[in-house]
Length: 137
Image 1 (spheres, rainbow, N blue to C red):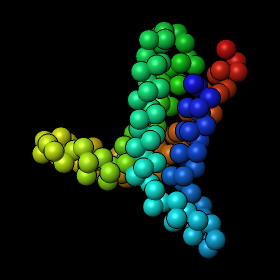
Image 2: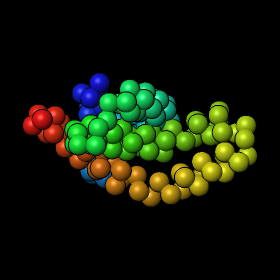
Image 3: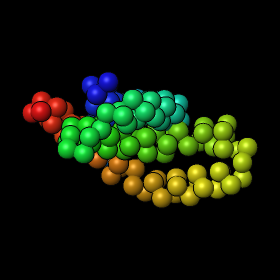
């Protein structure tokens, strides 16, 4: 499971950071715009995957196991990115039924949206750290 988490975190971080590095390349920019239309679906898939990974990991964490703690942080970061990316679909389908839940989710999205690139860089960094810790331990 940890390999899938690492791969998804790196790909998600690269997806988030791609517009920053592809501003001058027209072909890559066009491809990125095509993929960005599926941003909400990608976000929901990552959010569900993160929740499943978190549930499977929660019972196996000990205080002194740095690998599992870094894996947990990677999963939490992926869940935050999945929430930000999938907020449009999530609010339209699930959160629209409750005014209170919709307002709280909108507040959380407003806090996370400006930090989206930082979360993307953090996802890549945590994925690398997790793979290094797994190799060492």
